[in-house]
Amino acid sequence: MATADLPAGDVLVRVHYSNVNYKDGLAIMRTGHRQIVGHFPFVPGVDFSGIVETSDSRRFAPGDKVILTGWGVGESQWGGFAEMARVRSEWLVPLPDGMSLRQSMALGSAGLAAMMCVEVLERFGIDRSREVLVTGAAGGVGSVAVMLLHKLGFTVVGSTRRPGEGAYLRMLGADRIVDAATLAQPPAEPLMEERWGAAIDNVGGTTLANLLASIIYGGAIASIGLVGGRDLNTTVIPFIRRNIALLGIDTVYTPAERRTDAWRRLAKLLPDGLSEEVIDEIPLEQVPARAAAVMRGELRGRTIVSLAD
Ligand SMILES: NC(=O)c1ccc[n+]([C@@H]2O[C@H](COP(=O)([O-])OP(=O)(O)OC[C@H]3O[C@@H](n4cnc5c(N)ncnc54)[C@H](OP(=O)(O)O)[C@@H]3O)[C@@H](O)[C@H]2O)c1
Image (tube, rainbow, N blue to C red; front, side, top):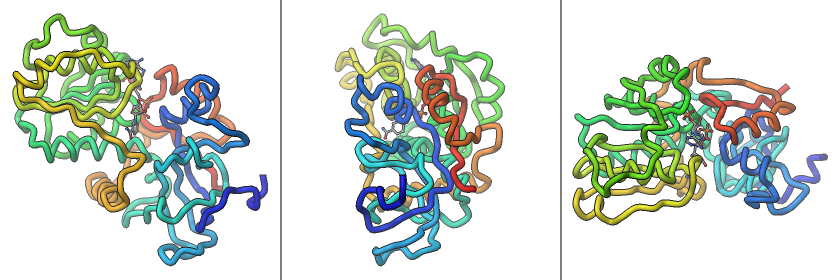
């Protein structure tokens, strides 16, 4: 496609990096089923970072380094699996000081999501002496969440379906690993043993129902994902007997100010970014195969897509 074929927008960005998220997997692999992408031709890719080529916006000038995550890009708007993207300036965030374009996409929507999950639990006021559980821990959001919680001094438990990723999760900062299968059954009772001070849940479904019954009195769960299912069958008992909270996170339509603050905090908390053990860099040609792998829950950490020459 020629640059002239790109949709309308006031900023043209030369894309340097994108990445593969679970939602990209849904968009690429299940277009007819889940209707993430409803019209063609279409360019998927929910995130990108790059350098402004031309701008009709006062906020950005040619040469500025920018990040885009969310706003329906890669879903209803053309996205980042391309060398050029023309977008609305209000969707762009300046690259935070101290962060490279490559590292910004190593974090991407997953990093932003993990940061916002941690912030929502902090604001709620969880008991810092108790363990925080991260489900889907070896995935993108999970890996960054484990790192951030560890950095902030929490005791972190990673739940994974892949026991072979135990060493990887410990390297990220997990204090303990649990087998995801032990959390995947519906709870036997509305209230079970109080195990977790808080949780960041990527899985949803019966796992989330299970966690709700096992959070300590006054604890909270940040619900970010649905890789295990979107239905939630539970009771009100944990809420009204244990004073717990289920806190929802959406990164797609997060207001610009909160988004910019979260990116700055990511740059501060992870000054060296993600280590190379967490990052897998691929060329654009490998995106379809990775989209299939993300749907099978096989990706570890973050897969970035290199688009610059
Ligand atoms: N609300 C938002 O704004 C927002 C933003 C970003 C992401 N998300 C959501 O967050 C979730 C994670 O995204 P991601 O990009 O981090 O995906 P990912 O890299 O594929 O990570 C998901 C992880 O969950 C585990 N998993 C996969 N399938 C599973 C299943 N059927 N049952 C139980 N566990 C399973 C796997 O970890 P283990 O092998 O360690 O078990 C997998 O690595 C997705 O649902 C995504 O849509 C939401």
